[in-house]
Image (tube, rainbow, N blue to C red):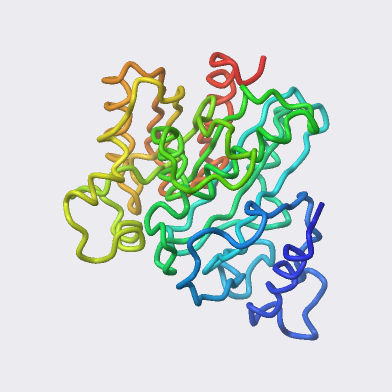
Amino acid sequence: MIDRRSLLALAGATAASPALAQGAAPEAQKPAASLLEIQPIWPGKAPGGEKVTAKEQVILRTPGGDPNDTAFLHITDPVLMMRRPKNPNGAAILMIPGGGYVRVAVSKAGGAIDQWIADQGVTAFVMTYRLPADGWAAGPDVALQDAQRAIRIIRSRAGELGLDPERVGVMGFSAGGHLAGRLSTQFKRQTYAPIDAIDTLSTRPSVAGLFYPVVTMQPPYAHGGSLKELLGADASEARRKAISLELDVPADTPPTFIATAADDKVVPADNSLLLYSALRKASVPSELHMFEKGGHGFGLTGPKGLDMSWPQLLPPFLRRHGLYT
């Protein structure tokens, strides 16, 4: 169900990128047709946008590069994109891409990780989300509003899609890992006024996977870019603490899998250590894998010739905690 808004956004990728705008561009430079079914997260305008003047854009992450390696800027109409598995097992995962809260790095044509999720028999959902520096009334909570609404939408479609609403996990990457972590630890918070019956459903993920995640907003390990986008340049200590994951981990946080690399120069691996320590203190079932190498954003395999192996490590954790058998 690719809606008109989504089709226009996909077409907008051509207008937004010089590499795609050339009329004589070869076939290989054109975006692939979307493999994902797309729906808006909000039934109308997203809440709290009265002062938002930014216009949504789609750009290539690397000028002249892969036309499906895109990023979304100034998002005003966040969407939820679904990839159906060939042999569904009734489980679902909400995937939250990163981008430092300045953009959302995702392709509407789908990618390797959502394909990997579907290959496990799990229905994959990938979301875009609004960004806090664009003037939304919710400020640093605006992306959390979208994530809470997205997981509720997945549960609301359980009967239609043959899903078990008690088996809906979340996976987040980099700044998306921070957002997934907030969804997991702050699921009891009501971040927006209910709109419809969907908003009566739970926002707690059944299990969480966080990959090279942004965790803390406290020095010396805070990711400066995410901190600036979320809170501005002169955030108070109280505001930084309020969105530092490691400082508020309730005992009913879902089981959490963390993977990072010791040589990550973008988001220090200490972020993952801080969260893992807090999870253990709260007696939350958790697992941490810190690879020697991999840098930031290592995806499914990491550097050439180095098998990061998290795709082998994550499924047993998901099975052990009931996402699928």
